[in-house]
Image 1 (cartoon, rainbow, N blue to C red):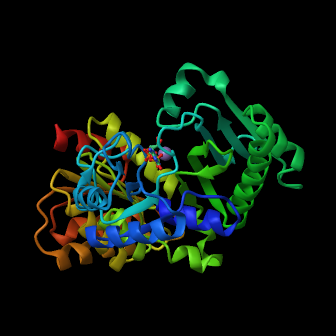
Image 2 (cartoon, helix red, strand yellow; image 1 turned 30 degrees about the horizontal axis):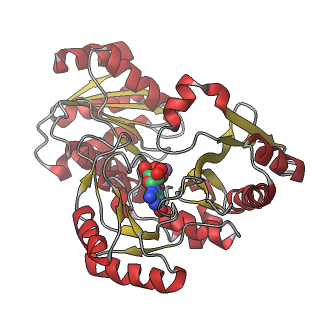
Length: 396
Ligand code: GDP
Ligand code: MN
């Protein structure tokens, strides 16, 4: 689960990490009120208006704008709220902006002493350890740095038995070329950032930029945070931060029904039990000349209600030309799944795309009989090759 920048910053702040202060706003008027409040609290006379969407690269897409007066805050906020923000990390349709963060300007005008640092904490799966990735070359082009000058990116691995050790935090501050107050600030920043990451079971904390201000403060100017979804049961306060507007509506609905569904943009819908089988089914579709319209694992209990729900969600996409159902009857009996398909088909009524059903395993023969006798436009096969051939025929 992903968080918004403002939510990530609030969490960081609660763990003692210095942040660029800001207030979230849902409208241009709220933006002005937020700007005034920040002015009272921090004395700032300039603000940044920042689109709050679950995508990075907002600066490049025009989603981060400086405002030098309250009128400008109002103008920028009304431009950004409601826009479809296109960034290098969104689709070409972009993401609709529902709210903005009004933040104090921390790049104090006229100062040249600020510098932008990159820092993230994430899991290194190969090493089985968390790691801190950091670089002096922070800012909007860290991807280019990683590609062209990877030697400028450092990593520090953390032993899970002992956590981040003080010498490691100092090593990081040293490698970033910091001295004096800034060095001490960075040690504290890294220590508390790691504490935040570890405590809330995050999968990613990416702070780009971490700013060194002209008066040697180290602060988080951005925060991209992802939480391990499997840990949410023990963090109800964080689970409550979920913003469903940022997620695909079909994926949310599928999740509620217990389906593991990810929308893709191909032309063959697929319904499969088991993630591994789902992936190989997608490969088969691809090899047969089609393109999967989704990943869908209906799970171990492919009952009629779930199958129906899955059909309805897949059929919502106009580009779906065929649906391939590939079920292995291990624990679940194929004839029960077949009955589920027949029931779902009858409940939905008109289904205008061909459905290929491949059931293999326990009671596969009975299942095929059931489908063949139902009189529905469902092609039932047992061998996978047959299913692939049929996909090829239907999409070409
Ligand atoms: P991203 O583009 O989605 O990563 O959004 P960021 O929060 O990183 O903001 C993009 C860029 O806006 C940053 O790299 C900064 O250069 C700039 N920016 C952010 N906050 C301020 C600020 O307070 N003042 C000024 N002048 N620029 C800022
Ligand atoms: Mn950023």
